Every structure is written in structure tokens, then in C-alpha cells.
Image 1 (tube, rainbow, N blue to C red):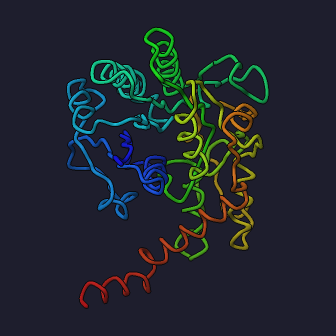
Image 2: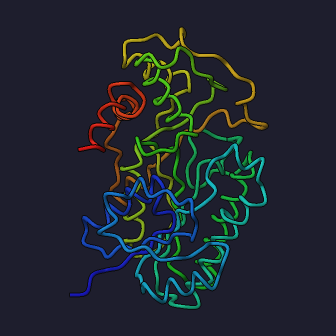
Length: 337
């Protein structure tokens, strides 16, 4: 029996790596679309590189997407690639639009050309809700994005809906609320907190800078959220789903839990930095995933406290191995062995 095949854009990112693991466990043949670049970071999929097949392609280049689809012949495409760091979208709004908005259109058009039967997942975002008009937010809540990233994601979301309604493609979007893990990039607030907590606990720093501590987010575990992506493409009809825990915490809560995990009081170790404030803030996001729970049978399995502890422990291990004298000595000994 021929294995099902899936193509993941953004496979080298947090979500891409967890999704690849999930699909491999389900006996898929997994392909990852990667741009030809001298700076590609394969760190998150190093342990998978003998199991996944990487193919060249670029969301800015339609012909490369057509070629990648022809070469891999997937039944499913998961579009996770984007310029996904919200603060960067203000300094690079055009690039953000090219990748995060128009990149979706290019992939959908490539699917139409190569094989309209391919099932397509678009990574939409809770940032599309922006200045929320009701709480919690579900699939019917009006969008009001507050950043170029949110605007670009909204375009990608609606062009996916349009492809579904215009061309009958099996195209759906997951409106995912914030989801984190030890694989999150260091520039994101959750990972920046866990990483700096580790450095402070190990005596490598005394303070960390932080922006808006009052901002509230619905944070879950990325490993849980990729299950929802897969479940969406297994349904009889394509639909859009909010994926969230339904529980909101502030950045201050994040700091409190992370520092408490290592026996410290966050108030002794933070400095508010106005340079880290957004030009237009999103103050509160909380998702209502009732539809996903009812129709997909999806449930989150990791609590906020468990998630923060997981990230802090991972960074304690990382920092102790790479930045402390004992860790550097072990590296030297290992390299000379």
C-alpha cells in the first residue's frame, strides 16, 4: 500500500517540526519545502533529517511551488511558512505581505494547476482578531488586525476561504491562538522569558528587559496544536476552526510562573523597556475552541504551568551546556575525544 504523502512549508519552524513528527508517526511520507539559502536553520528537525525529504521551493516563486508539488505528489499540503514575528512586520511590512499573504495565493494557485484534489491547510492566526470586539473569540468573531502581520494573515485566511468557495478546493484554515514550546524562537516573548530565566538562575545575568506585561494571551502547547491541523484535513468537508485552550494569562503571569519555577521572584529581575512595546497593541486574546472540540474531538493536553515549566527546564539544560564554564569544558572534551 502506498503511503500518504504530505508537503509542509515551514518545516524547519516550531510547528513544522512537531507536525513532521506527528505525520511520521502516522506513517506518512513527509516532504518539507525549504528555500535555497546559506542561512537555513535545521536545528528543529535535525533528529528527523533521515526521515523527511526536503525539496527546494519558495513562496515568492510560483514555478518552484508547481515543481515541488509535481515532484512530491502530496495528498495534503500544510502551509506553515510565513514571516511570523509580529514586531518585524512593522519594519518589513512589504516582505511580510509577500510571504504571509501572497505566498498563500501562490500555493493555492499551484495546487489548482497541479492537482485540485490536494487537501490544503492554512495557518491562520488569532492576531487577525486584534482589537477584539467580543470575548472569547470564535469562528464568527469579527476580525480587526492591529499589525501588518495580522493584516497579512487575514488576507491569507480569506483567500483560502475564497479558493474553497470559488474552486471547490479542500482548503481550510486553523485560527490558532498562541502556541509555544521549547522549540519556539528566542525572539518570541515566551521563549525570551524562559531563556532569560535560565540565564539568571545560572548566574549569567541579573535582569531581563520586557515590554507590556499587561498583555493577555491564550497560550497552549504547539505539540497539541499540530494535532488539530491534521484532524482538519481528515474531515469530510473543509471548514475553519479556532484552536485554543480558552484560558488567558498575562505576560506578568508568564513571568511569575517562570521565575517561581526556579525559586525566584520576577519583580527582582525585570526592567520595563519601552522599545519593546508595539506601535499598536493587542491587549487581550482568548479563544473559544468549542467547534474544534465538538467536530474534531480535539483537546489540549498541556496546561499553561506545565508548558512554562517545560520551556524553563529546556533552557536551563541548553544554557548550562553552552554558556557555563562546566558546559563549555564538556564540549571541548567531547570535541577532542
